Amino acid sequence: MDKQAYLQKINEIIANGQFKDAWESLSAFTPPRWMQDAKFGIFIHWGPFSVPAYHDWYARNMYIKDSPEYEHHIKTYGKDFGYKDFIPMLAAENFNPDEWATLIKNSGAGYVVPVAEHHDGFQMYRSELSRWNAYEMGPKRDTLGELLAACDKQGIVRGASSHRLEHWFFFGHGKQWDSDVNVPLTTDDLYWPAMPEPPNQDLFGNPAPSQEYLEDWLLRCCEIVDKYRPQIFYFDWWIQHNAAKPYVKKFAAYYYNRAMEWGFEPAITYKHDAFMFGSAVVEIERGKFSDIQPFFWQTDTAVAKNSWCYSINAQYKKAKTLICDLADIVSKNGALLLNIGPKPDGTIPDTDKAILTEIGDWLRINGEAIYGTSVWRKAAEGPTQTITGQFTDGNEQEFTAQDIRFTVKGSYLYAIVLKAPEDGKVSIRSLAESGDTHHLPVFHGIVKNVTMLGGGEELKWVRDANGLNIEVEPATHDLPVVFKILLD
Image (cartoon, rainbow, N blue to C red; front, side, top):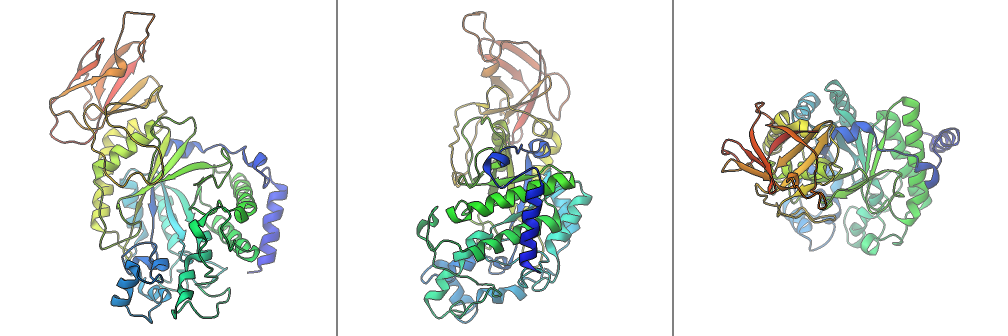
């Protein structure tokens, strides 16, 4: 590829398009309707790091002496076995993109975000910019392209993610000893540039990414856009670095203009204020907001607590926990991007499958309270509180039958009770009535009838000063149940 010609093309698209590479112009972005309606997507971490089945940061950590990954690597593979030697072992001999797409569809997800390139620099797609890609090595297939084509057939919106910028320093520790990284590197090498890791990877960390590296980053991102036309483009952290800002703005302008040209609504998700607020979709990694936000946002988390990729030591969450997370996030104007980790042979672990299947079973009955809904005047009631912030979902919260999340669509309010009531009794305090017009309750309108999704018949209910009191059959499970309440 003629890189200079491609850079010129990017500049021309921006110059001739509506969106310019300036925050004032990019603030014309609006979150796509399709994403606000879908609420739920599937994230996929798959690459050479799946082979050691330890952690998705294995590529970095295996070169840090005395780290658990280093000790594991030396014991299992030996000192002379480098990260690049995992690539032939990513054979993907059982990769069936149609099976993946069917599983994603059956999970109830509306969009998919496979990792196109992780921090390790190996591209899971056919690239003209580097030979270190899945079409030329490892699987020797365009795994990203095949999966997105299969998802198209299922009506699943296509996406992609780039974690490339952190590659600047990802292999840097390998230069500190006689590893296979500690050789003269060229721009054609997988490990290039293997720079020293900046302290805390902060906004002004040095050595800062160079112009050559950032232009390469921009080209790789734009190549994904041009080859695969993702409707959502996910960025991991460190694109907030000061040196990256001009290139981040340039990418956004290029992508938004291309989306207009091709006729779809795009979304970029970002962390750590990498984008000016309002120019893309706010992302929270493994975390949430504690209350409704006036802006649409997304959280990404994984079915495993301790890894993003396939791991033999994975500690899995319960499907029930993730269903509760989904309800909590949607009630606060958010969407959930849930990650799974396929095996090196291209199969999806049975536990991942089981979790997605259980979520899908719940959504087939209760999805009406999720898809296409909006926030109510309050998100929640009940004793269990969620905490605002990144990296707060390490422990699985236990909810009670008093913990309720609200969504609304048309004339209906949906009350999602996060644990089905064992005694068959639910009281929604936010719908209490009051005869004192000087002290209005949360809702001062009329409740006309109440049903439960999956049931259909009107339930017995009484509204009084304590709340809307509903009677149902005592629960035989502890999954969330949804009450559909007609208001006037």
